[in-house]
Image (cartoon, rainbow, N blue to C red; front, top):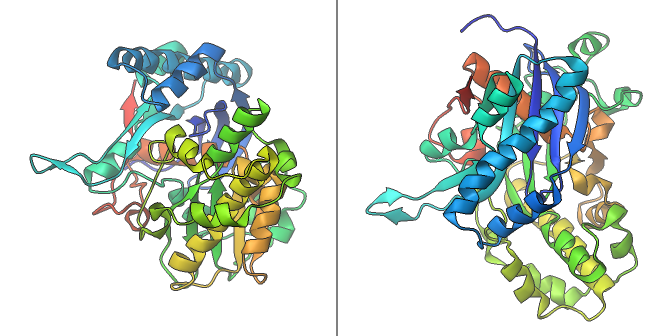
Length: 404
C-alpha cells in the first residue's frame, strides 16, 4: 500500500428519504479525519424523483430500473459538476448511489443465499461526465462475506469518536462551523474524553453506532426514522416532511396506537440487523393507519414519537446490557426536528446527554457524505473499511469498486 496522503474527495449520497442528492467536497487526511469544504443539496428533477418512488413501490419494470441507473448517474454527475466548477477536479469521487432495494435476509434458492442489495446511479456515467475516478458500490463486498451490507457509517463513527483517534471534548467545538475536526486543530490541547457514545443517525431509517472505551464498536438499524413521518406529512398536509416538527408539536400522542406500532417484529430482532423501505413500505404504513387516530396532527405526533421510542427501546434491549452510554449524538435530518428531539429527551434516561453532530463541528446534514468520503478514501488505498461487528460479515474487506 502506498503512503497515505491528503486527498480531495467529492462524496455523493442519496438516502431512503430521497429528498435530494447530498454532495460534499471533502479533504480526507491520513489519520482518517475529514474536513467538509462545501456541501450542497442537489434536488432530483421532479419526474426522476417520481420514478424513483415508483421503483420503491415495486411498480417499475426491469426496463425502468435499467434506464434509471443511467439517469441517476447523470444526476449525480451534475451535482459533482457544481463543485468542480468552483473548486476544480477532486482526486476521486465517492458515490453511495441511490438504494432501490435492500434484502439483508439469508433466504436461499438452490442452497444459494439471496441476501443482496442494489444501489443505482451508474458510476461509468459519473466518471465519463466528470473525468474523475469514481468509487462506488460499497455494500456488495460486505454482503459477499455474509454481512448485511449495512450500516456502513459505523466505520467513520469509530474513527471520529473512537478510542483510537484523539479528539476534543464537545465544549471545545462551539466555535467550529460545519467541518469535521481538522488534524491541525486537534494538536492544540486535544484530549481523550472517556465517554461512551451512541452515534444515532435519523434519516429515512434510523441507525446507531456504539463507540465505547469499554467495548468493541457495534451498530445496527434501530428501525423507522423519517419515512413514516414524511409519508403522513405528504398524505395529510401535502408537505414533503414535517419541517422542524411543527405539525407534530400541535398534535397529541395516541398511546394505544403507539403501543400497537411498537409491537412490530423488527424491533425485537437481535443485531446485526438492517432494514429499509422494502420493509417499512407504503403498504406497511397504510395498514398501520387503519388503527390511527382521526386527527392528522395526532397521527404525525404519534409517528414522531414512534421513531423516538423505538430508538430508546433499542438502546434498552441491545445496548445497555453490554455497555453504558454517556452521550447520544443525533445526526441526519431528524436532528432538525425539534419535536423528535424533545421526545428523545423524554424517552432516553436523564443521565444520557443529548447532543447533535454539530456540537462536534460535523454537519448534521452532511455527516453521511463525509463518512462516504472516508470510505472512498480507504477503497483508494486498499484499506478494509467495513466493521463485521456491525454488519455481521465474516471478515474485514475493502468495500467499493473503482471506475476510471
